[in-house]
Image (tube, rainbow, N blue to C red):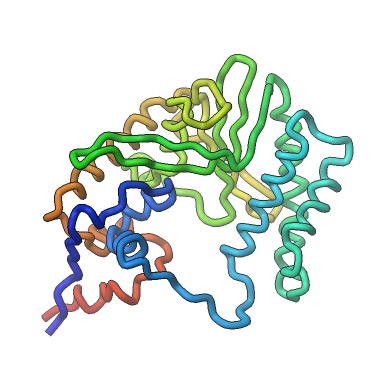
Length: 285
């Protein structure tokens, strides 16, 4: 007989009252993954002597771009591309000893670097400040008390007119239009809500644009996609409303942490898919 779908209902005191924006999106897509990670505190173990995966390489690229913006916050150097490549060599570090990284990923990074410094130079006009990996938090009221959403923004640009451009670097897939419109892909809009609330320390202004910088490593090395148009306020409001409703629902101890309640929004990858046993629970009797 097919096993019943997992439906754990932990007591309210065991349920998290704080999540980073990336995990909030996981919560919307796959509540069981939040149960496994934050309540059971299960963590996947890395295979022994494994080659770096996309996540490792994506982290190295993010760190390189963040350090470049941090070092040259006041303006770009004359040899910007060479500087970014030097920083990239530092952040990739021992990974470059792996043939696959040196032969495949490093050439991709060189194309990303060329594109990135060109895009950054085009953005300098009217730019007052630019920060990377900046921390912030938003507190949302819930039936069981305040719930805190935290974020580390990849990049925030502040312009002379007070407008803020929030940038999310993507080495993987960019969310689809449906995921954005249905407030499933909420990471960037929630960062906009934190910025609008003045909760990114030292960064004051109004969110004027929300952008994904897709780092393809092809030709060109990247693509910029704006979401929410020239006034992303409505998109930000929709994301906050969706998360507020999620908080209220899970503040009811009768609400279970189901695995992938809506198949359409299943995450592309999960460390906990083998525990969820979706195929077994969905098998025909």
